[in-house]
Length: 522
Image (cartoon, rainbow, N blue to C red; front, side, top):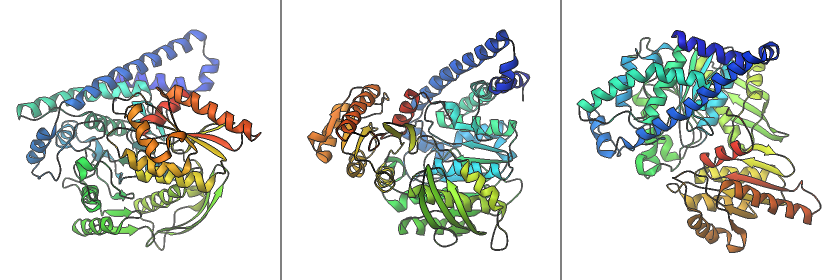
């Protein structure tokens, strides 16, 4: 780690140390906070700079890069925050930076829904089992620093800036080489992935938990040494880029079930697979056979044996690869999170080689689950009236949210605040949410990708009826409007306990709401 980066890390440590701050002179505290504020501003500048990279590569450029990698592209590439589809240039960064991702093993997670929650649960379990972890997930809710976490916490703005500064010369070199060969510059996702790998190596960590950006086979993350590949449930999403059938999408996501040809220490690969449509499972199993990988499947090798709704979450009994884990408290809502939990448990068991004759420490597992946090996933923002946010951004996620609200809560009147990205299955999302909401306030979350309010209102009226749909120009206005509706419903029933609000429709919507409610990035 460079001297400047060590100084920034020291500043960060002092800022987060309340004991130090309580004893330090005021001028020292002010100086430290000032440095952190400057670093936060620089994070925003870097984020804006990286956002401009999204326009630098298009479908034709993507096909050229894949051809250069010696593989024929199954679908056109797309440039953007969510694409990991362009990893040829990232391989160049990995080589130039001496392949930092080779300094540690990884647990690699792909799928359509539940990836971030599964990554966070895996992270918590590994830490409870005394491993130092690095975690990279996307997209972020509030700040880009969330994408790179060490020991369960986002790196500081100062560390983020230092890491970007460290890899920027390598990025420029790879961009020059790519452009000389007629290719595009690196995308935002590629740069952020390289930053995560470098930060993990600098820490250093014992194991990385790596979420795929999009797809899997061509993802920028698919250069890690991953003895465990995890596949969450697969559905229809990103169909313009991954294919418009379940088996086509499964074929892309199955690409992480692999062994890197240049692994320094060859290891066996275990594919840990969540519940799947039969067509997806067939594709995944075929890929596992080709990769000579062992397979663990939910409801075959591991399963949710029991589940009870509890205050603040749920109580689970889980069948893992190494035995039964009873009395597991998971502080997350929804049946889907129970399945995420057992999938994460099986992944961690596979990483440690647990099996029929070897179980993980049950108390450590309980402690790990109890420590799980998944911001933006049925996360409570306020009481009286109750306000939740949820990052549901496709029909499957919206259906899981609606099921959770109907099965675990007894709302007499529930108002939804919804803003959806225009490139998503808007009708599918609204249809899934309709049974859960008595009224819906449609709005705009501020992203240029978000569907305009008028169009969203028209489509909402088709499913909810005009009398249940209200419009608001901005998210703050929508929350204010929904609050008034909830308070009115509470006044009519002489109780606020049965009225609530859920803000949902996209990750951006949930993140913007989280910021409005004064929550820090996690």
